[in-house]
Amino acid sequence: MKDGSAFLNDNAQRIVDGMIGNAERLRIAVSTGPLGECLIDAGAKTAGGIEAGLRMAEAAMGGLGSISVCMDRASQKWPLTIEVRSSQPVLACLGSQYAGWNLSSQGYFAMGSGPARALARVEPLFEALSYRDTASSAVLILETAEPPPQAIVEKVGKATGLPTEKLTFLYAPTQSLSGSVQIVARALEVALHKSNDLKFPLENIIDGIGTAPIPAPHPDFLTAMGRTNDAIIYGGSVQLFVKGSAKDASELAERLPSRASRDHGYPFAEIFKRFNGDFYAIDPLLFSPAEVIVTAIDTGDTFRAGERDLQMLERSLG
Image 1: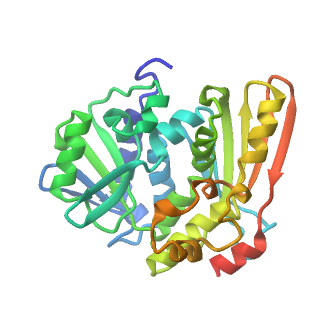
Image 2: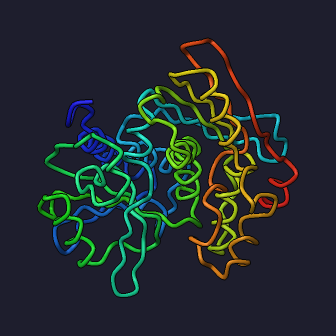
């Protein structure tokens, strides 16, 4: 892909402009920060909601994802399901949506996701991605209840090479409905990230779709984080369409589901406590969908592995 040919930040800016124009309907608040940055509270001190979360997720994918909700009657207690599709899944998910930018300053901590990452390119992940975005503005999504302090805004401006008044920060906490939706909308993204960890050639992944149930938000952060993770780990289903041999597709399908992790089989909140809150001590292979389908388009073969665990969902989601 040529540099800038997908225009991630330009796409996201159009989504943000639409959110600003519909702020009252989306129940979000728009303000200007001390450095001229645009701040959009989508669920911290505002009500937000499912629609606001969907817009956040679309912006996080740089406009390269189609995201919707539906009712899945196979899960009687948690039928409300999010569906994420992309015909440029590597760029949409890894080049934009992945929350890989560590932004912390004097007690403030947030992981940044969204297309601003493709301008900054400060993460090792971008060594595997040739795409370089070009834009006059940038959008960043933060999983937090507080807007970024000036030091973070300045850091993002410097890394992206843009004046701070050209930056937009969309934020909502995990405990909010908006936050829950935009996190669970990463069902496809976690499959892409794990595929990269498994050394599957990213250029061979050409299309994808993922689903996961939307859990009820919870005022306790650990419970809310556990629910959003378990929604994907035990309730997520992904199909990838890949180039290459049937053997490679079969091996990817077998290794991709969350059941391959040593930590599988327990609610995420319990696992998090077991490791004393050290997120990075948890087996990274856990962060993937429960059920995977991989279709090898060159041979017409389809391979399936893993399965959704509805009992675990009921235990975790309440």
